[in-house]
Image (cartoon, rainbow, N blue to C red; front, side, top):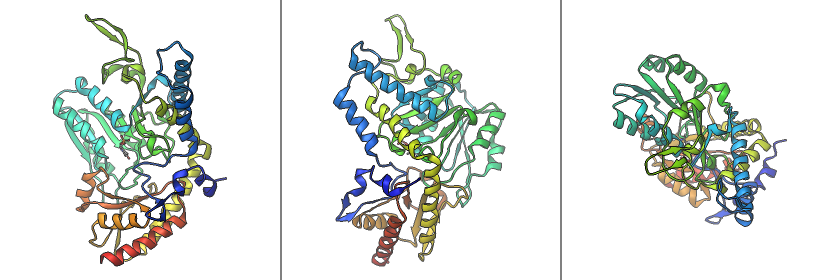
Length: 404
Ligand SMILES: *Cc1c(COP(=O)(O)O)cnc(C)c1O
């Protein structure tokens, strides 16, 4: 049974105050909070078996290696990858995307085409623009409509034999839109293009099955699903990862080093140069265990209730305009009130203990599309409550009184 009051006890931060008021944390799309079960795993590592992995014969190193590889296996099972070595541990979504964008430098030629969507996070735009500068490839954009839904007929028209790669987020962090990735993958594969799905915003709510999706690359960050910052994953199909060169050179990623010639290690180590975020990787596994213990379906169903409740309450306020009303979306509400600058609303809400995001949410093209400087974004997680939404609505009404 999903019991939010019990769940909240796992998150020590939720009982603190901000500016003398109880914290209401609605910035979950930027980073999620961390339960004791994950905090304890990190502390346990440093207290009891802190050691470098994959090299020592001593007991601590073996314990650390076993825990790290067990976490890789948890991640592999969660996303249903065929092999554990298809899971590359990275520092997060941004790092994962850069590994692929950098790796494609040798595989592209001038005039090749890449397709991105209009609703991407900057980390799924800029590395590809840099790739285009290096190779002469051309970046095309799938447009979106005013509800924040991709125009799939235009996507179909953009696809051609020149298309080599398509990269789209599973869920938009700025709008909450759930994109039709099954269809995107199927259509891209019909012209032999590879597909990277940015799952940073989807992974906390939706279990992606990479084999069923037949996706070529799927990337995410641990810190959006109750894990620590600075760790994430790159899933890639074995045969494609084997075609790509290493991203960084260094320790861990080599088979043999000679001054005449160095050979590289097999997957996944080829892409894991240097000492990784060991406690973070272990805690990533613990975070998935924690979320699966509650159940992603129960989480998504409860968050949908919060989304519906919050959307109705916000719409009842005069002057509120919501950006992103896709029929299928996660619990993210981007909005503005009349001509009030989002920053001013965010600052007053903070004074009242309520944490929301303001600005362009690392998705400036979306703001340009709507011709706005930014939005206020309230993003809910499974540990939030309707009472907290009521507190935000009350605070927002106060802010509007003060600012009008
Ligand atoms: C948060 C986010 C990213 C970036 O993740 P990092 O952890 O900062 O690398 C990329 N894409 C989407 C959709 C996101 O929500």
